[in-house]
Amino acid sequence: NWLTTNMSRYDRALTVFSPDGHLFQAEYASEAVRKGSTAVGVRGTDVVVLAVERKSTAKLQESRTVRKICVLDEHVAIAFAGLNADARVLTNKARVECQSFRLTFEDAVSVDYITRHIAKVQQRYTQSGGVRSFGVSNLVAGFDSDGTPRLYTTEPSGAFSAWKANAIGRGEKTCREFLEKHYTEPPSGDDAVMLSIRTLLEVVESGSKNVEVAVMYPNAPIRYLT
Amino acid sequence: WNLQIKFLHGTTTLGFIYEGGVIIAVDSRASMGQYMSSASVKKIIEINPYLLGTMAGGAADCTFWERVLGMECRLYELRNKERISVAAASKLLCNMVYGYKNMGLSMGTMIAGWDKTGPNLFYVDNDGMRMRHQMFSCGSGSTYAYGVLDSGYRFDMTNEEAYELGRRAIFHATHRDAFSGGVARVYHIQPGGWVPIHPGTDVTELYYQYMYPSRAEGVEEVVMAE
Image (cartoon, rainbow over all chains, first blue to last red; front, side, top):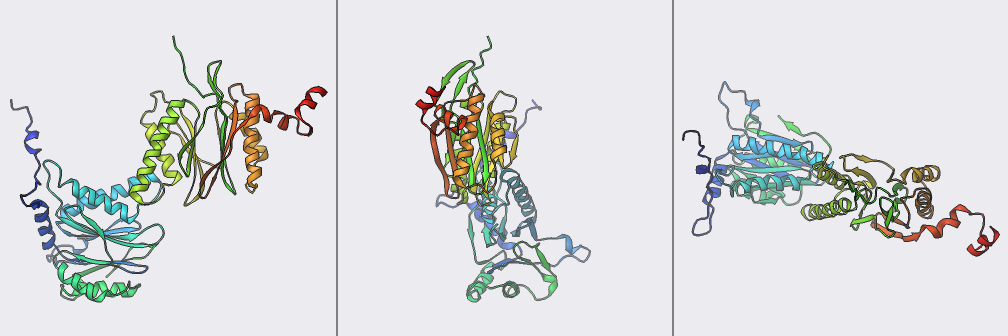
């Protein structure tokens, strides 16, 4: 009967365990992240900085339309590494959750909460039928209501953790090593900006065209440095 | 046969915010039509150590939903490592009962507590109404209570004056409203949580104190004089 649907054929799990306990699909998703352009995040005493590598755009492409640092709410921003389209979907889900939280709880999300939500979504896609993981890692940066700066990383597996400074994407190993060497104590203000840019320049050719930086202070709109 | 076993529309409950926190005062009479079914109902529901709810309308509806609210508040604490705000707690309750709108729930409750923003008092009912204000009274005796509250209320009362005002308002409501009576219960919500001030003062014992305040003598003398 040509009217019946074949929905059930696509409901089986795609992400299953390997004999030695790996989720290969989640690990392959991390491979996709490692091919993506680098993003660096630095948490200072009173500031959070996100710096991303801007891949060279085609001559006729409007470079400004490719935004790799997105605002989730007035006090939280996100930068990603990996599949751009997957990141767009995930960012939008996070934005909706930020507003839904405001409606239900009459308060702004904490950075921890929204990171947990994003990570929960990413994990759900590793344990649902007919879907694949998001090929995205995220740097979630912002301030809690008491002004404390926060930086979190999420992965395709759905794992997340808090960081003082971190890098994701193509140059993550190099950048993380650089940060481990140069991040001694939480930097303040401009030092944090300098550190994030210097870190990114380890893996990116220097030039303002190749780097996009966003600086966040508590109770202030996010500032993009050009 | 349309038997309305709707307890507790006959009730007086009240709450107000003042300098020292929130005062919640209730009566304890339950009525089934003209029959006084109980004189010792607990109309203050202890949701958790820092949140109180009052009961007016259907006893089962109030107790059940406020206990579910208690569960949600505890889950919030565990997930977010901080207490839920009174605004969020009252919103959760409101959204829960709104899903049953027009299905016959009967609940007029006040949610009170002390959170990050200070002392808070919300009114929530089965229509899905939710309001924040300094002073509320619910139930058949509420009009009488409002009269006493409005004439005696000052924001900068002392604690004793506030307890006295709550108790007196309940007394006068029980005196005039046939469906309110029993004992007057008064709770005080302080920064650390709620404290019972009057666990249950029989309103008949308050009668001479409030109706004949000028006579300082004992009850026997007053009866003889009449």
